Length: 131
Picture (cartoon, rainbow, N blue to C red):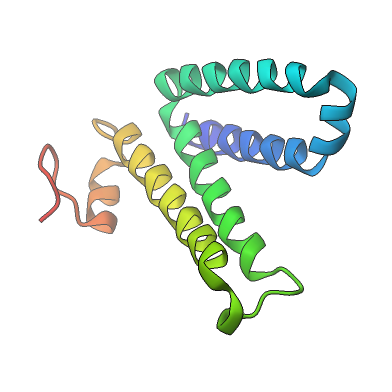
């Protein structure tokens, strides 16, 4: 179960990267309005995924967050001294997405054999807010 969810989450993240890589061609093919409809449908499907397969969703979310931050840091023109507000916010946004993904992973692991190990890793206590 857990391995399949992790693989599914990574496939969802890879799909997101693939879509973003070819977004210009997608918009040219289906127009802006078609892309807007697709965004709405994809958003609904991701919501359903989160409700039905929270572990897969959390893995995808954490992976997208990591890739967002990595894209900023690995850009050929990136310079930490001149990153500016947009670079800093992009990096912080990637980190925030990662934390939300890890939170969804933790929620997905509640009442499973992996919960104790996850709680030990995260420092959270079951059923309570973090200290």
